[in-house]
Length: 215
View 1 (cartoon, one colour):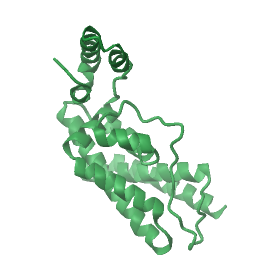
View 2 (cartoon, helix red, strand yellow):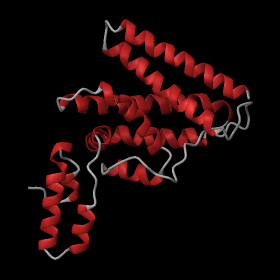
View 3 (cartoon, rainbow, N blue to C red):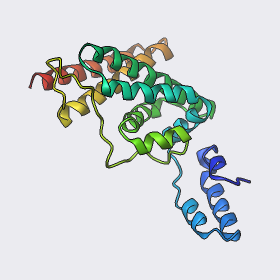
């Protein structure tokens, strides 16, 4: 029997709703109506979000490294931008791999969730609230209307310091495609066709970024 929210978020998603309702009943019986209401309102995390919660619980150092790299990338200037973004990308890939492993260990296929994991992390890095929930392993979703994907201060370079929304989306898609291509190459030795498709999409994304940066 689950006796705390902390335990609740450690459960497999298939057990979440029943355990949440049971915990809410316990709190109500104990006279904690506000606590019961808060628990009852918790949503079951989707598989990608659940996996990220478990990464935070099992590999907190990797999560802190990613959040730190994200902050450093946002603050980077001039010649430090490329290295900061590379570090951010590397840390992000490490967390994605850890989340994939957790999903696979649960008996599920991680392939269909990989892009959602990467996209979720991009949103988390743009939201203080989501970053806090991520650290605690208590994410229920990754929606934050106030979240902004910030890019480094590159005022010493020709690249705009405030990219357009189209450019931001194109860069996010480029990161997702790079992750997909890299993981496909290392994960499946005979996935030649799948890798070719991912690389084609990557090339299209790179061309789109180049076009937007020229505008």
